[in-house]
Image (cartoon, rainbow, N blue to C red; front, side):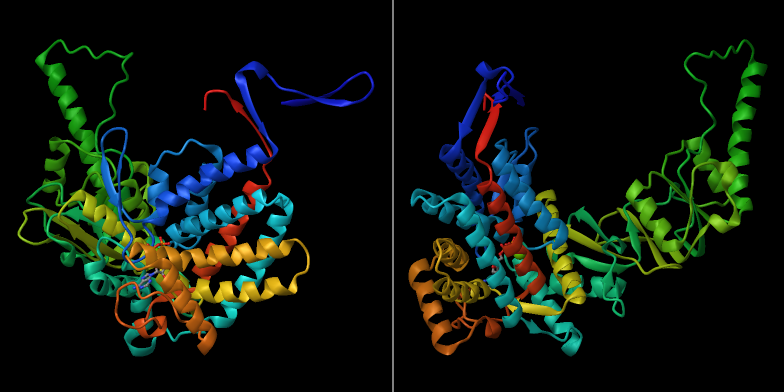
Length: 535
Ligand code: ADP
Ligand code: MG
């Protein structure tokens, strides 16, 4: 599209290939965008909450995954529509920033869009709607801060952290084991956390999955676990006081390029070549050993010849260590990644207390653990489960729990879940609406309705009557001035979420409301869509 001016200086728009393009303007554009985005939110709404449904997603090449994680669902839905894609990004930015609450943020955006549609039908200008939502959002965020509570994360064996992790895990496939998994996640995060600086480097927690066994076999290993074993079965199974040489070059003689030829015309020639190749290996092994290394971890492979030589020279080695593992090991042991044998020097070696092979369960498969790394503590959560689908979902769930714990270490304020915080904000926003005399009043009221949509959705998903349960909770919140009243999804007999101990982080709730409002405002600003005709 380009802007041009005619002889009189009047502007006009030139559309390239206009015949093949579709153009929507004004109200039609707003509505079509909103409907597309709402469709995505609607698919997610049945996944929200502890009794939310899971989705089965089949990729074009037939891989099946079953998940409850909002960010993963929208990512795998392969959405084409450009405005609907904004919701995918919305979920992903919540995931990147906070880690949990990826379904809730999309559902809230959907509810806001629904309200925007009715307001548009009433003839309210999109910018007024946008402004109203913005002001309501500010009120909601302020109110969230006033109802938030500080928790003592260390009290009672970190009980509060475990509870928060349990809330995050409660809606997942692995919810039966939420307490065990929650404890594992808390220990892992605390192991690598820097409590004085309130900082956690999540890169130091490695999550390794291995099918087999069941979810309750999941455990925490202090050290870095890599799914590899020593390259030769006769190499020692344990190396104490390990000095690790971390190589990203292959243990093999240089290969001739395709444009070169080697002519071997006699047995002598062949022998010479063989000896020369041997010499290469011998030199490489020597370079490693001379530096003082007692174990070599190699990102590449090496053949049997080299393997045999390594064994003969008593240099335990591991091949095909993945790139991410190489980086993690370098970070934890202080090793420098060495790209050429000539560059090996003693200072570049990493140090660890022990590198040993371990075996899990009754299977024959062995893995390596690197313990007591010199630089930083690193831990591994080894996730077990009956099938690839289960371990993958368990990995995503534990990731959510870990993020929640990290967020609490950064900021120890919580609000209560089960829709109670949203409901409290809705009440506050409604009160505020009465003070506004302009048109925005309608939008502000609608914002409150959208917030109420979250407890509604939670109630609906667990088979309760959404209208009666939300009305009951709202009445009680007002009567007792208690912002902790929510939806009793698990039918535990109390609607006070503090008694149910449904902890959610303040940072996550704040982010959810802010991000959802932002995206809706963005969609409401689009009044002209020019696109190829075929979508
Ligand atoms: P998200 O991907 O947004 O985290 P979840 O499926 O984890 O979505 O659902 C989170 C919602 O479920 C939150 O609003 C939370 O307050 C609520 N919730 C979680 N556990 C419970 C529970 N035991 N009872 C009531 N509500 C719960
Ligand atoms: Mg969650």
